[in-house]
Image 1: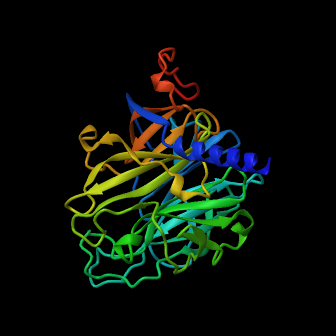
Image 2 (image 1 turned 180 degrees about the vertical axis):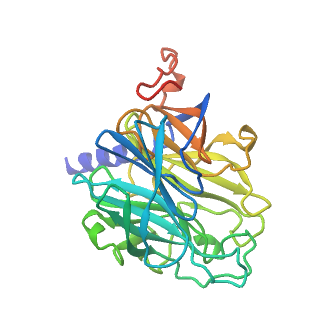
Image 3 (image 1 turned 45 degrees about the vertical axis):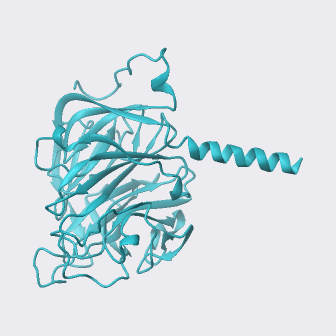
Length: 364
């Protein structure tokens, strides 16, 4: 009997892994809308008292408020009580039940290299007690342990960790950090993952652990990593080939996690080839993320700023980390598309008709 149960459990786990890549996503055109602020990173959002609050960053965060993602918006400055004087990009937030807002930023120290355009980012944590108007820096939680490279040719980064998104798992046990490692050996560069226990959010420094060789045991400050999506050509090259800038959301329709990614390929160092999507059921098992599939080609976005894909879910509660069967797709702060998600086998079923128009929000 024990053998039967063990075999059944093994087969169920195997099925779960093998179907993680069977979901599908399709993009269709829609009337163009734009985020309320300039975009230079992931742009996180949260709901408070029936209103949508949306951060945009370009060296410092701005906060916009509206009825939903279609506006109109009122935008205001944010009081960022930073520990260090450097540019900050607020890239992820999570609103606690008591109204406390937790967040995470990408920061770029100044003066690390002789070149004024070269830096090495790190990732830090923040908290706000007034709905995001005042943000307090809790310190750096993710930083490379490798020497920086002043000869890097990508144009911006000579190492570091950055371009992150953060999501709390459905069990409310861990915050998972998805980010880019621009440092160290080629085999460690790429999209990597770390996590922090939910109860450590009050005192996060030293409490984040990186995923490496199947374990969550490498310290966030220093420590080594195993990429879930390794680079093909490293970031030190003038023509890197790498997925980067992950944006992760929980999809209520698929009942799994979805990651959107940029793809840098060729010269100059951040030339974008396309936007990609990957799926996963279990955040604690990074090896089960599906092979990324292309959603958009560079030719489908004539604007120069083809970075930072993310969703925004429809209706109250929909954000960059929570969406349903259909959502808005933004790239570089512009949305010319809606994205539809399909369960395994759904596209192959002849009885499946057109995806229903999403509910909620203004006329698109």
